[in-house]
Length: 429
Image (cartoon, rainbow, N blue to C red; front, side):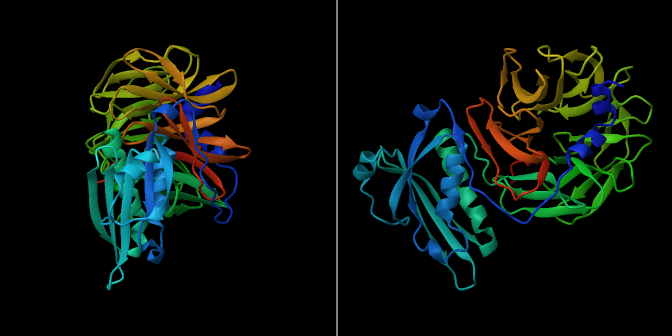
């Protein structure tokens, strides 16, 4: 059997092999951000210390600085002063320091134990207020308040919605235990959604961010389940003969595209998100797997070896004749489509390296965006500007992020262990 067939027919088993390794105690490191060729386009911004934030369990100022610095779009100017939202501002002084914008705020401790987090974004060039708001939050959500402020700053200054308050999910292994974990987009605050002595693979967020679909081996075979992250309830949606793998949500959250080998060769099907209403979309003599819906729900991208090697194809969401999408390279797998439908991300094997590529679907221009060599499982941020993926570092997996132009790169400072199959959650309402 060819390498591709091993991946396609028993993709879940190959991925499980990659999960070898073990988790250690929580050890976090600073994020090192590599930014290439965007310096002149970075927005200079000063972030003053929020007054009274020493009373808070989390330093809001540090959270905002880390978020904006990690994005690659901002040059952080050290303010060296604490200023609240009502402090008098000498805009000329801040312009002289090179700051185009200034962030000020405060964190006030309330009698009921909550915190009132207030912030204001100032335009130093026009000497005006660009934005500002206040949030009342329990101690456990002060970090989220900081992320939301960073989101607002990012959107007001770039015109694109920020992703700092979104969440990610991924699979990790600690000893003999597999965990599906949910964390902040910066890798902090991980919470186990599922613990199992059997492998968990292929997690995928529902469009509303309340559920995750994944493949579990608890029944000694790959079975697709949907888990409600709020209640913990699980629904078995695909447990057919053979392999049940690669769940991908439709944009409206009503169904999943899946890869099943129930009829022998692995093919693409759809199934209701609550189970049932199974429909077969491909009936080829080839292996068809790894389906992904387009953002508008009208098409499905998938992997097939019908051309003799693994390539990415596109078909109508109701089935029909597929069209080949990737032509450069002889081994292209794991298609992921951007939220705006303009960019396709995938893993390509070239010269023995498995690396992350993006393809502009309008122009056909391809770009390699990773400089690591054992990459897997790309996932777009909900604003489409970044891609998270897993990559090997020695004998363990790490989570990395790269901008779609390849100019901003960093790895998440998750606790030591083996991390695989990240999936970036949607914007939350």
